[in-house]
Figure 1 (spheres, rainbow, N blue to C red):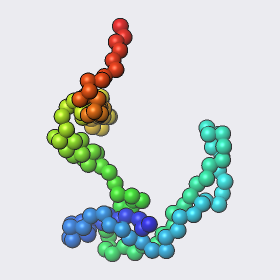
Figure 2 (cartoon, rainbow, N blue to C red; figure 1 turned 90 degrees about the vertical axis):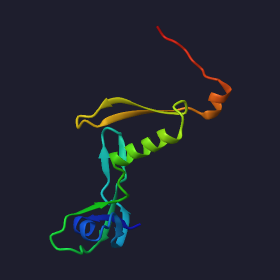
Figure 3 (spheres, one colour; figure 1 turned 180 degrees about the horizontal axis):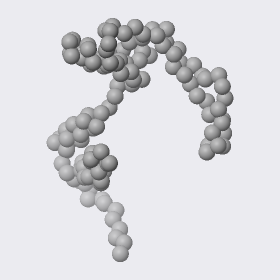
Figure 4 (cartoon, rainbow, N blue to C red; figure 1 turned 135 degrees about the horizontal axis):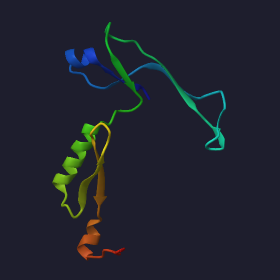
Length: 126
């Protein structure tokens, strides 16, 4: 699978977003065995080798293995789910905020069949 590239120049000039690039792509097991004392076992590492040519001189490029999923994407997806589902089925609350000031969401999803049957298991602690 090709890697993904985002070019600042192509993004501004051509309105091009993330796109697949690269050739001579190899994903192989790393030859050197590595021991992790926390896991108390050997770990197999893999390396990704590839070649690519940059199209624009002086460009800033970002490379990714898969399409980035941004915090804005998350908020948009949660907003959409909130708009198409009742609050009984899908509820999003803010658990806390990160040091950067971003909300950390807690999402509650309830099976619609359980709502219709009114079969909720509940217990109280005091």
